[in-house]
Image 1 (cartoon, rainbow, N blue to C red):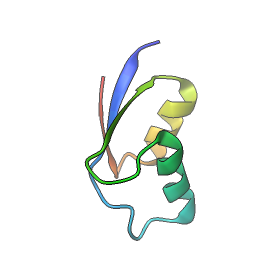
Image 2 (cartoon, rainbow, N blue to C red):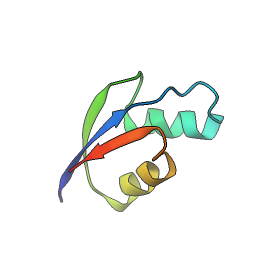
Image 3 (cartoon, rainbow, N blue to C red):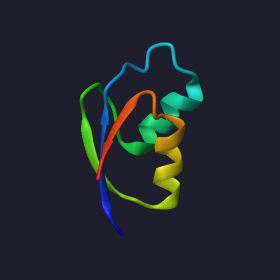
Length: 58
């Protein structure tokens, strides 16, 4: 599988609890933090739900 780099570019303040838990599941704890994950369907679905908070690079 391909790897993708996910960076949190906006704050989670004002987000729903579900969105905050999804950020936590992706491994993002604070702003401008970057994680590198496998591009599985589960991860891509989480990224799609939070596309307004994240920046994604392949």
